[in-house]
Image 1: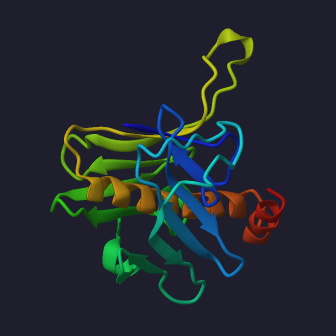
Image 2: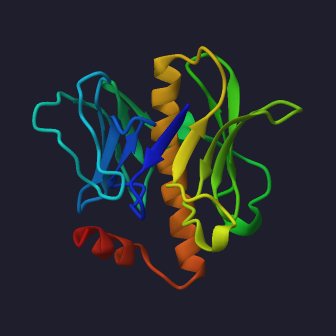
Length: 206
């Protein structure tokens, strides 16, 4: 399964759409750092402009699937399908901090009872099974412009591997991917002398 994002969009203010350009998820973030996830059941005939954060949603029904309230001085709060968790409930810090300072990798037990590991790389966040093989479950593919003929032009996407994955598991992967990738980008920006305030300001002008 591959979900495509709007070109150049912020991970917290974008659509995740199918190969047929149908919206499946939308993220948005408020000024007080609350990320909202809206889910759109497929088959409603909606289409999303692949280059913009917009689409024909006038006659499309969706529902709030989850929210994440980000805090600077105490644990972040997740509310998923009406149930509340903190980041400390869901994600266990493991391994050496590495290039991303105090962020590090996180262990997560999915709704299927399997243990997964969110790995933080310099250019992406990746989800693997926490086993000897580190089987890849989900990874982010960066946008390619297709310049000079080296790569075929393609939008950014979240690719989820595996067969017969439950809808609940896919929902959780999207929610936690956005959370982990947002943190990875914040740490990267800190290292590049950019602040979270700059990202907030950029969102206001999208």
